[in-house]
Image (cartoon, rainbow, N blue to C red; front, side, top):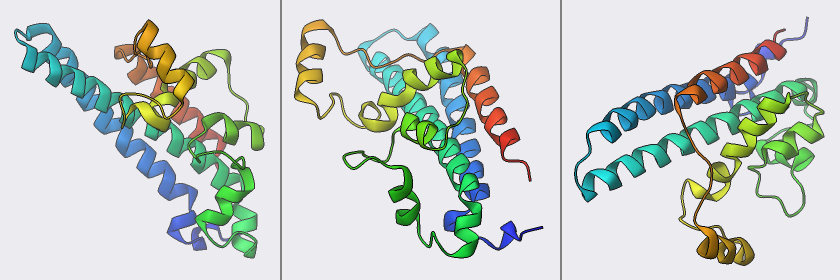
Length: 181
């Protein structure tokens, strides 16, 4: 058996799996607090607080999903990492990242490694993709046309609710199951 435990931590799928799980757990806690505070809020400062909790939760869920997909990519590349064909995270990114990509594309990883996802998983990932790319950090995207559309039609960039705790955990668990040695 190959010695995958000898892969340095910066390229280890174990590291990315653990990071994904830790952010997912933090997002779960934020979601519970946001739901609770949303039920009792009375003024505008509390509304802004709830909004920040929901947005922070979406950012953490989004990054958690990105990290578990990167863990899958690193898992698929484990032999190339062990052989020295991939020496750095940048080498790993160059394999699957499109030329003009930002490195946060869930579907870039899924397509490159031909990962199988269900329709409901696709919908889940689509809901959080913008939060990984821009919505978790900025109020508007860096795309003029999307910004113009959002200014006309409203700033919708996904939603979060209690069922996502379960759906995201199931997605992560499924990816972990695929990485069994």
